Amino acid sequence: MSAHTPKVGFVSLGCPKALVDSERILTQLRSDGYEVVSSYDQADLVVVNTCGFIDAAKAESLEAIGEALNENGKVIVTGCMGAQADEITNIHPQVLAVTGPQQYEQVVGSVHQYLPKPERKHEPFIDLVPPQGIKLTPRHYAYLKISEGCNHRCTFCIIPSLRGDLVSRPVGDVMDEAERLVSAGVQELLVVSQDTSAYGVDTKYRTGFWQGRPLKTRMKELCEAMGDLGAWVRLHYVYPYPHVDDVIPLMAEGKILPYLDIPFQHAHPDVLRAMKRPAASEKTLDRINAWRDICPDITLRSTFIVGFPGETDAQFEYLLDFLDEAQLDRVGCFTYSPVDGATANAIHPAVPEEVKEERLARFMEKQAAISARKLQQKIGRELEVLIDEVGLDGSIGRTQADAPEIDGQIYLLDDVGVKPGDRVRVRVTDADEHDLWGERIKS
Image 1 (cartoon, rainbow, N blue to C red):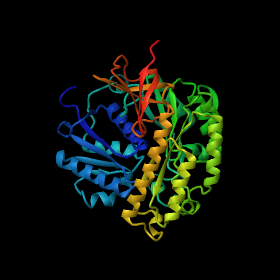
Image 2: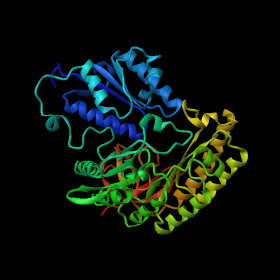
Image 3: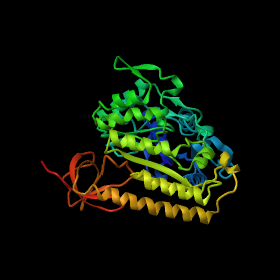
Image 4: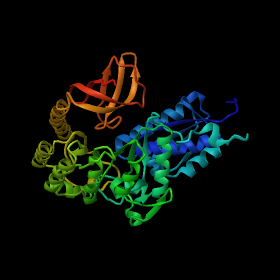
């Protein structure tokens, strides 16, 4: 590109939903003629997309802003923490502009203000932007956001105050994007939102249209339509509403991946009530068993919080017993972190930090043993694997049971005859508590 082309650096922090926001902003900037560069010294200006979910994420965001200011000097801030602009400008008054989450037009407008668009004529959707838009993930998988915001008021969470109530994207728009991604070579669609199973609630499940046919704005119908595109479809952030049961048969039929990321957060009814989460763990276990009856290969991923204010030793032991009974496949766990504005901060007594850490260690030790047993049971099985990386000493992929970055991997040692994005059949030969090893079945 010519020397006068304005160059923008980009720092993207936070969850996959924030990553989708970054991709949308980058796509617009590229279509406006900007060059996106990967180092501070090349950039004329830097955009930092922040996370404000917990205090540790805020600290990371403030550190990233400070680094960008020190290394470049011209910084625009956006994202979840941007909804609390004073917290940013009090520490970093030098930033050029601060915008909140989902404010795509405002952040792009701020870039235009401080780094004007190139004046030359260009064809934005021919030579600058690929058909699937700018993606920060590898070419063979992509996050697909279907809604913004959340109607729940979990006491540990401030997302509704940052992103507002649920707003579902039109089903035709979602399907058009999914089709573009698959046409561009994406092999895996990772469906994300603050509350994926609430998709369409705000529209009363309005009937939309895609390719001339009616399609309800509802999770089941969306999954059915995506399942016809030929890519893996993986559901994340699924709140355990009763109608989640309706998508399990689609998994059993192979329409979408037999994988459900469903954050239970805890198991004890009193803790769940204090969190304002569904509070019937016995029914949860019944549903898990029913899902496995319909789809024996289903992978269940969940996240939990230990050390929530008021959590007693007995309630924590109840949670450990739930793990034993539920036998979940993939589990993440966090100690409770008091976030400014979260109503749970007013619940007493607070659990001491050393107790939180001890409970976290015990929780993860128990789950590691469960995971190890379940992965051992996969030795000898033939599984479909999506290749992520190929190096000099072999390749690394994921099974249908593993989402990128948060779950495990499968290692194909000495196998370099594949490329990222290939879907291959593999026989599992070994396992530990997190990962698998295998050999490709060559036709």
